[in-house]
Length: 317
Ligand code: BMA
Image (cartoon, rainbow, N blue to C red; front, side, top):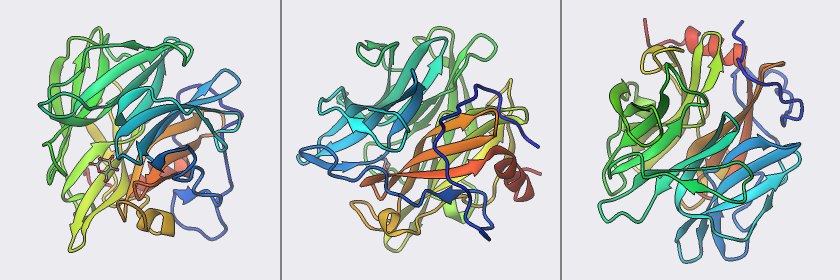
């Protein structure tokens, strides 16, 4: 029975698995939790990040405006379901991830503005009021920069996904290391697309979740149909000390576009996970994902059940 290594989170949002549902990840029945027009002048609010903060939660939300500029926006919540979004733009960019390391909340995101293409921006805050920005962690062109929630063997670890300036038709998962969040090196290839559901490209998802069996990493995988890309969520388990080593990897997706809010929107057929809350006491995990590049959805799972599922459908033999 896999266990989460981390803090308890008594107020994690939760809903029981529907009766007779056979798969390990299920959706919140109040989805979407954030609609596309939750802020003035917003076109869509989707791939977003959340963390426990004080006695509630803080989040950084991807808001695409009616001009189709891409902005990051702060939000706060008592229950991690109902969010008070601030109508102020924090950074230019998209697809934020958040994690807490030693009292700092770290944001990694797709930074736009470099003429060479997108890079991974990193910033940190203690209070979600003032942010310190680091130099970009990658050269262009790169997306899906996801930090691990602690140093491993003295280094910060960052998943990256080198890509092109467009709607990249390829993509492998890499990991880079840094002693100080400024100088990055010791790069490793971690995973490449394998099965059809993710054959076009893969990219990291929420902050990796530490368990006694390894780092539980949800990620997105993309397949190409005659009607375009289909984005689903998969999962793998990486070695705790050498997280570029994949110990187990599900051969199928764990969540894919099936509901109206995942299949209909600005980019149809997209499930794009960017955050997860965890409760070490109960093994509960709440996953936040973008639906059809338009809204924010929430899904749930139990760590032991997900790990068992990955092992039962394991690509790594
Ligand atoms: C990716 C990113 C995501 C987006 C997805 C589907 O390349 O841009 O932000 O959700 O495409 O459009």
